[in-house]
Image 1 (cartoon, rainbow, N blue to C red):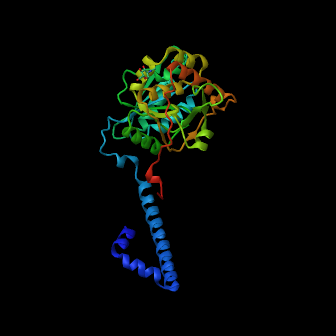
Image 2: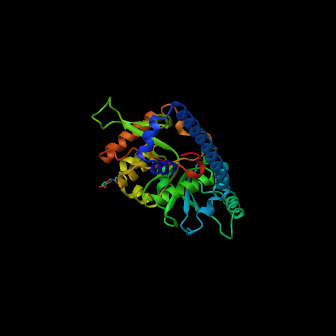
Image 3: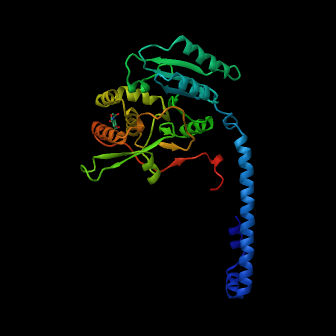
Length: 333
Ligand SMILES: *[C@@H]1O[C@H](CO)[C@@H](O)[C@H](O)[C@H]1NC(C)=O
């Protein structure tokens, strides 16, 4: 604002006068300008930090008080014989304001014990607000397959699904922000854990690919997938995954106990022709690191990408470098 008003006021003649004025007056003006800059910076710094304090004190709920409470999201949680982790993460998420229900994907030979059911119900009851309680459902599967986590859920009340593993925890503020992002792009997969692929120029004719993990995303700032261990997507993708996925891919995921998350990224990208959205969020790993710590992990993931691309007849994944950040947490722009 300041710059344009000065330009408007000063005529061309003034500029010319300034140019021929003495060196001394120019240096005084530069010093004055410097002073102005410094005081303006201090002012901006002070006001942003002050409003930052105000903003962080607000709960996510106050921002979204106009949204329909039934239009929240459901958590679909994949778990396997880690009841302490399960309890810990359900205890955490049940306090997130717009969470409607928790569906636990159960693939163990024995159904959940009464003790576990009771303690989870009690936990949710203790967290209920205004007489509203997060619903809890178990989706019991006979077969132990990674595809279970993407099975259609008949009684899912919300369109938005937050797919999560039992061993990662995100603060409610991050989850609710990701939900906001998803609401602006409900066809996209919106998640916290980005991964990338690129063409393997040493092999094939542009139809061979390499999978890149966290380091590759960090180095290039580019990604083409967000992993379903922590991602929002529309429940319609459960239907697509179950009914439209080439059988060779679902069989591969079951047999190798890997890459169902890549398969989900493929089916969403194939349906939308668009990249996913990476959301900045704090992550807390509460369990031991899973398969991704194995040494040959990225070779196995590379194999998945190539087999899946062949099954789709083309590579549907789209790369991007867009990252969604909560502007309430940013001081300077
Ligand atoms: C991928 O998209 C194409 C074009 O929309 C569609 O014909 C095909 O069925 C999709 N493939 C899968 C596996 O969904």
